[in-house]
Length: 473
Ligand SMILES: Cc1cc2nc3c(=O)[nH]c(=O)nc-3n(C[C@H](O)[C@H](O)[C@H](O)COP(=O)(O)OP(=O)(O)OC[C@H]3O[C@@H](n4cnc5c(N)ncnc54)[C@H](O)[C@@H]3O)c2cc1C
Ligand SMILES: NC(=O)c1ccc[n+]([C@@H]2O[C@H](COP(=O)([O-])OP(=O)(O)OC[C@H]3O[C@@H](n4cnc5c(N)ncnc54)[C@H](O)[C@@H]3O)[C@@H](O)[C@H]2O)c1
Image (cartoon, rainbow, N blue to C red; front, side):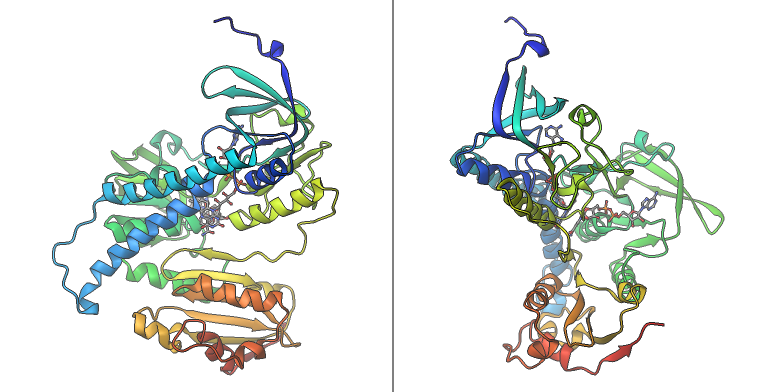
């Protein structure tokens, strides 16, 4: 077959061309296409982006299998005998793959029914608003958009530590495909990914060690939260090495690794069978011609956007993780609303939105609004309501009494923030978030008749407790 030179390829014109099919991007594409616009979405590998394929949803699927394993290990506590139970990673991974396949099918149907064209291949800007796609099936296409949207996301950061890249560490993508359990997994990084995977793999049967350079796990959270997490990891038999400066790595993940690190001026070595990196993210902005598109990056390499999610190039938008905004699916989804409205001539901005998070360890850690450290840094006085989860009677029926919840309340009785480190913490936090959105005073929750025995009933207990008044120094 005759090959055409790339610059001979005919340019196809679209109303909107989207680079990356992740959260945010896909909803903009489907919405525009349903309005009759000509839309193309270029995706190199993961239909629907990271969340359904290699991130949020499959990781929570794995975590649920680990939860079942933990119930089996605690079965006697519930009066049930389960002698000789066995974790079979093949089955764990099959369940995850089945879920992912179902999710991808839903995405494919949405592309079909919306009329947005899915173009599978790697896209690179060759000039402003013109993207050349190296198709996965071979060949090249050139797509120009009246508007263009960049949603290329991020990938796992592999730091330039000697021997680290050569050790071929697992990323979250590989860890979600483990058909056999690592005997001893070393996880570099005590953030969201490191902690969720460390606990899941420990519960499934691996020995796990987390290596973190700061003085605590999830070091940006309040001291009582980080202490709670440390206690949880201790109880679950997960080793945690803090204040560690990793100097070098020897060996190959899967065959055997040795991590050399400095701790308190002392040089130490940790040996394991597998190594996983959970050290943060690197934006997917290199090698995709952004300089030819007139799209500037910030000092960290993320796409520079204003509050309307416009980049520095006209009619060129960006959303999701690649903008350096908080890296959560719900933020990318809200970015979709911003771009959708602005494409329609509106003036929707990202400023002022409150972003909750839930880390899906067991128990979960969830927060919306101010932490105590943040309130103190801002010089805000607050009343602190704090109860142990054991004070919520539902947790006793579940035998899930670990953790606590605490809320900060301002002088006008409005809730400034809530942190729940406890069973189903994400659900409890979300209920309070709704009260905060409605501008309700804490007394509305305190005085509500909430069903007994539910976890939400704990909010009555929380807000009926005696608060401590905290004034700025
Ligand atoms: C392990 C893990 C667990 C997580 N868990 C949660 C969670 O529980 N809750 C939560 O809110 N967030 C979670 N996150 C974060 C969440 O996954 C991201 O915030 C979200 O997926 C960002 O969406 P996005 O569209 O910006 O990027 P992505 O979903 O990463 O989409 C980018 C897409 O662009 C494609 N792409 C990139 N470059 C090109 C190119 N040149 N050509 C063609 N295609 C390209 C990629 O293949 C990808 O499909 C998790 C992340 C990880 C890694
Ligand atoms: N449940 C959720 O919502 C969820 C789950 C997973 C991931 N995510 C998103 O994905 C993002 C990325 O997650 P992540 O865990 O990779 O990043 P992270 O930024 O949350 O954590 C990285 C951790 O690695 C540590 N670290 C960095 N370099 C190190 C080094 N050289 N040696 C030892 N420790 C080092 C950091 O101090 C930090 O604690 C999160 O910030 C979050 O936005 C969300």
